[in-house]
Length: 131
Image 1 (spheres, rainbow, N blue to C red):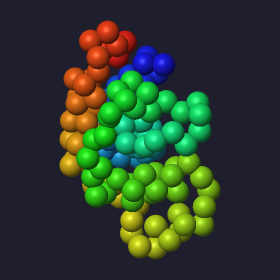
Image 2 (image 1 turned 180 degrees about the vertical axis):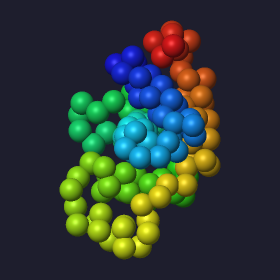
Image 3 (image 1 turned 120 degrees about the vertical axis):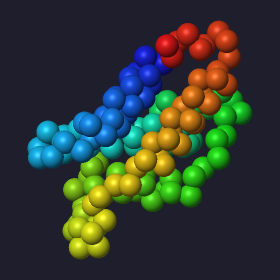
Image 4 (image 1 turned 90 degrees about the vertical axis):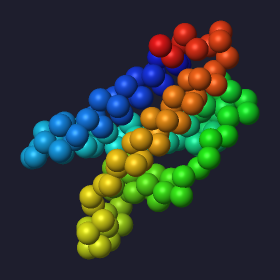
């Protein structure tokens, strides 16, 4: 599973590149959508507990893993969920409140730091799985 988890981080990190993220038009829109999907998956992996028995989460690898939850976490996860994962009438509400843009610099930095903390906290035997 580590290969799949690492893939999520690599895609997140790749799509977070401002030169790609801010490309205008459909191509940039696809990069932003891809970024947000991997962003949401990483949030779930790094911060959430298992919702379903087959979910992969960081505590599967580090039993006492408990990074500090940023204040923005719940709102960002819900926005990703509502704007990307499901067709919901709340999309219209986000649009009406001009809440379709994403201020991600701080969040990207924090997720990168938490990911690096996760890698550093892994037991020596499992660290190579994530390379």
